[in-house]
Length: 465
Image 1: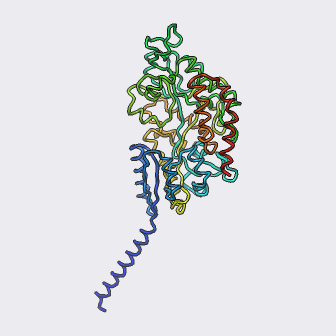
Image 2: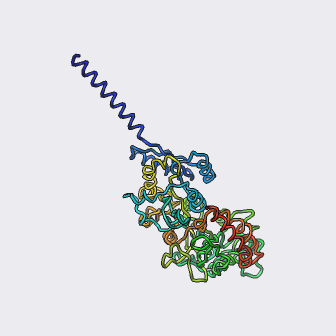
Image 3: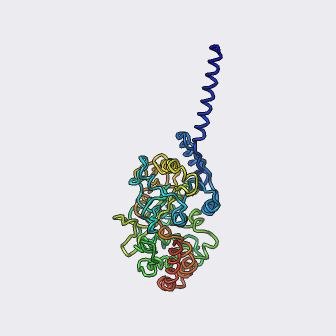
């Protein structure tokens, strides 16, 4: 064979080897599916994060899909059908407790322990605690991590600054929470009937109110802000019916509507939601989470800001894990990032976890915080302008930091199947009787259903086996 033929044979052999090598490399690239929800802005941010991750990881590629509606039902259907996504948003509370107790989530603790890129000590404690589960004792808020927090979303009081100024009412202190008495005083001064009268004026027409002082004081926030509880710390006992601080808080929610006339009644909200009232300038104060910020920045035509949640007369605050010196309470929401059991994500858990810790780490958190709708799960980043965004409303964004430190996850994170044992007796019993209609005292309504609450709670725990 002459030199040219030998050279051609060598080149052909090298070409064949290279093609085979490239083919093997291509086969080694793992593609993992990732599902979540959210609007176009969130979708764009996450697609950008996915693209950046994919560009910097040659052995794994993430395929991102938004499920536009009824996300939890869709996720459960995919899992039940044997076609689970590899990585998924898992909301705290019912979805997380249901999935983790069914063995549908991969234990991330060994991956977290081995990681050099994600430091759990730098994360808000309550953001991590809600995704812990002890499979041996079937206990929540303890044990191993089955999700990393995508975010933490505490709730605070949003205020219409223009309405305060128009009524000549001083703005609430940006740091010190209002008491119940102060809320009643301020709410009275900001509530007007069609004749411009306040509820404490002679001749006030409670059937013809055109501006309300306050609405949507979420009941968990009022309970926690008065040192109350719905269930025991271990989630096994319904304690609200025997907790005087909780009973007092629920009665207060009734009284601001039926005694003080500063909160919209059922007739008023039948024609316009509380959200619409606030957005159209007919409501001075309402509760919402940080997630409302992006929409409010784009849509509200008045000056607005945020303030701490109110505190009750007990002088106590129910704070997460006994955080010290908390000035106010409430509940914070969150969404976790999990690997779904039975998926390729479980098979390639190290690769799936690499993506999860990227989203939960500094780069992913800074990009998500830029949208304005979430607080970074990492404390140091939350303290910077990446979150505080001083050139944009709300001016008092620091209130979210105290809320993130102190607020507990909602009581639905403490028990399995919360809706199954709680909702019927509460939303179809206690709530309409006490708060909506004002026809029964909180103490009586809770006492009447104490045994029913406990019986249903015992049943859902027993269903775990």
